[in-house]
Image 1 (tube, rainbow, N blue to C red):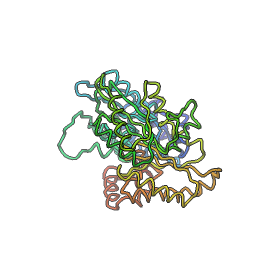
Image 2 (cartoon, helix red, strand yellow; image 1 turned 120 degrees about the vertical axis):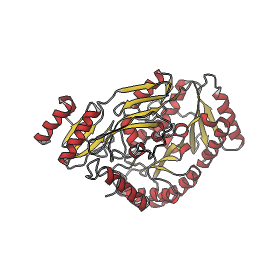
Image 3 (cartoon, one colour; image 1 turned 90 degrees about the horizontal axis):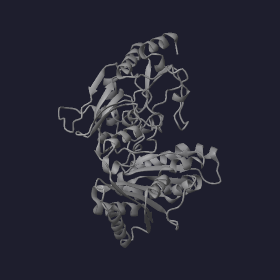
Image 4 (tube, one colour; image 1 turned 60 degrees about the vertical axis):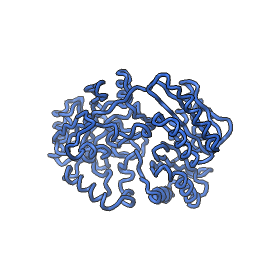
Length: 468
């Protein structure tokens, strides 16, 4: 950090707003991406964010917005030049308003997701976004990546949960769009430009989020399935019985579950017999006596009669519910214990999931015999985490050397089924250049046009999202 830049930043944000030991802000949580920075600043207010961004614009210094730094694509990590300023929103943790009558909560970007959930619950409401990093990820990061999580099937992504935004633009001006309106038909919906933009168009500093009635009853089932087609069929059966009470539908291959059973302390197989695939199905209701166990049991009974379901267990209490979800949520960490892995966060039409899994598996096996596919995800909305581990016995170097070829196979297959190579993690720097081969050139042209309009100097999170 140059002495002039350091002094001017301290004048804007005070001593508490400049990080003296920036190590924790320069590497992502997986250790996959790292860089250096001219400075790391933690403004405490929207006005301070605006002042920092304006100063950086004046000096021609790039800004890298950062939330909880829990992303998976390197979107919040600076480059290696040492000339970028990391702007962390983690001091902006104020809940500005909770309007129970309007079912909205207005929060600053640095508020941790779990804090929003707890504030909503204390008011008898539900904020439905839920994901593995909810104890450390922030609302600003959730918005920047359009986070999805396990409740998308019923509640949608962050795009659907957001009514208004406050954004510091690349020139330091503040756009105040904090309106808690369900209907506002006065032109372009500007907030949607910034949701999912990964900080490349501006810095989100606050948001108005939609709340829902609290969940007062729940039923959770672990279901054994013969194949992914059975999962697609089961979704139809459960929806036919439960309607929009179907809140989550997670699909897991046997291999993904085995990894958790092997590496997670205390993990147990809910069903004694081994099956190729499993689904975690959850219903929820705002009624305290919704009798959801009976609903899910009736749906599963119908599925058994249709030879869709091989076996099932309905959780009998909160401890068993937690244990079932731990099996699902522990997959990513368990896979890390099996050596290097290739992570693919993809989506295809729900009806195409069975054919996609079969075709992609065949192509990968031909390219690298013995490759271990770890497939799981929010299949209720078409989102699969289609991850790969190397063959056994392990040869990590050889597996890494094949990474580009293997990922290309997965992405080509996704494209063949009219899917997306990024369902919920974003592009960041991991998929920035890859996307050029899978996105319509006109779409990229329009995206570049928006970027040029809002950030003509190219100083807002450069090197992310848009191909070079």
